[in-house]
Image (cartoon, rainbow, N blue to C red):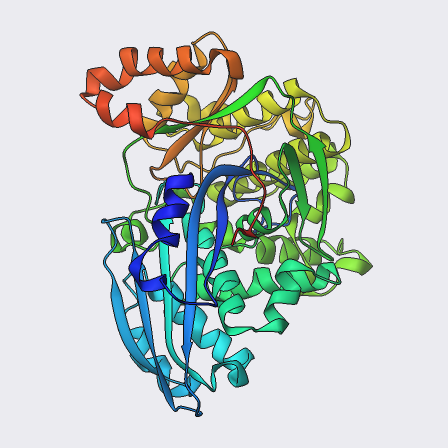
Length: 457
């Protein structure tokens, strides 16, 4: 970690820059997949793998109409970039759109949002420099894109002295202000062509070291913490399939879960037609499926799911509500065994094995909603095999695919003292057979937990 920081701090671009700063933003590990879309309770930790961003500015004595931005990355997988930008927000928009497919588009779009929020902060800026380094894997289900956005936002706001942003990130006076930052990150992510929720950013902004972080986004942002048992570690197992959600390949891949984003609207209409919309959920824009867990009992919800004729919507609804029910129980009465069960059932819903599909879809009115599975099916055969092999190793309690799915990493909850042995067994029994032993030696990560977004220098 210190070498990553030093290589940025000592970079020739930043030498002699008095206003130099350096920040870090962790990746996130999610135990509550796809739940922010339906306003279920969310559960995260901040990973101890980060994106580091450093920036500095050169000032002019006069107000200037343009400024030069230099963006560089010490990771050779990402190319460097330089551009002269207008200090007029609207003039930049078409120019920035040319780079929508590039990694640095996030930084360019953020700069335009900062220009809009605080044009006076740019008046005397002649040159702006921002550089990155990381040990957080990209496209691995750990929200590297939001880590890039958040680290850029904090670092550039420090360099530009944008107090309206800094106050909301570093010393928010209210939870409403934190939510404003989350929505700004979401806006930038959406502009690149992917519809993300707000949960990932919340984890990276609100998490605390050695704590599980529970988040509820609406009607008002709320969050709470539970100590992580000190005997546990969280192992990241690569599938070596990149889950690049903004790529053409990802967007064009047929997805079982394509109707998932329509669940809130569908259920609003379903309950309205049954004259069961309660007063506090009477406005469509304020309605979220997960809120029903606090209004109806398990049997009532299972019966409602059973009335859905569209089979895909039925299975997705069962998944969303079962996932939410388990998280609600964890929040109200946490136990390690409940956590393990939740993670394993969560992967079961992602599993694409045809033999398991009927089990995924079953509704049993004699069982609790949290014991049901539903179907989301965003896994791959590789991620499914990884989960099955890992769960048969002593010391592994749970394993599931991470992130948006269709590749990326698996998360395994393991006994910390057995983590090294578990890694060796996985390399021998799985990765070596795929001729991926060397890559796996580097790519298998063992996490405890980290602090959230913060300034280091």
